[in-house]
Length: 68
Image (cartoon, rainbow, N blue to C red; front, top):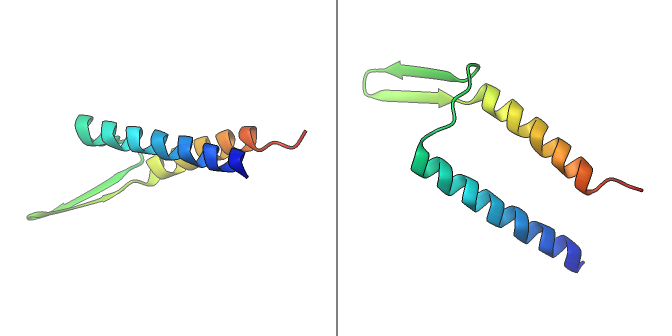
């Protein structure tokens, strides 16, 4: 159980660092992301970013929790 706690702690710190970096350096836009502007309102739909992050996290988690 302590191993799972440590892994969750590392992921939490990693997510906080990535989130802080995105806040400081701007948003991460890929060509498949949609931005809709209408007057004063801007609506952002990160389709491609979501797919890339999902694939990357799936790969990392499968490598970490792979059965031997």
